[in-house]
Image (cartoon, rainbow, N blue to C red; front, side, top):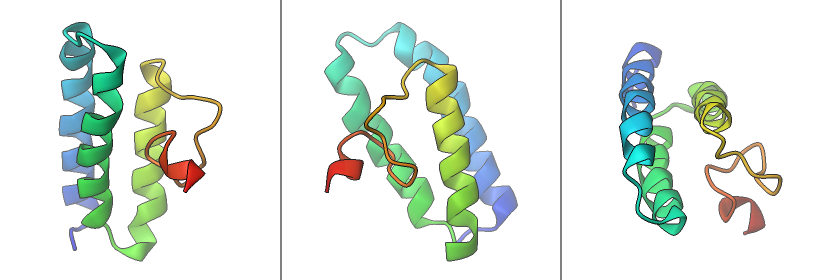
Length: 84
């Protein structure tokens, strides 16, 4: 498990990656599996206490880049996870 500061550093790196990544994305379908893998890796390093904080940061990133979708659950990192 990582500390809150370590998780925030990981989240900051992911947030910094998003603008150039989205600018060079060839097809929208490529985004979700890649983002989900990175997000779940960070969530996996979070303690139960920090998971909500991490999820809020991930959700904010998606909203900031127009990637939030109506069918996303508050707990999910992608539209697919909320449908399990």
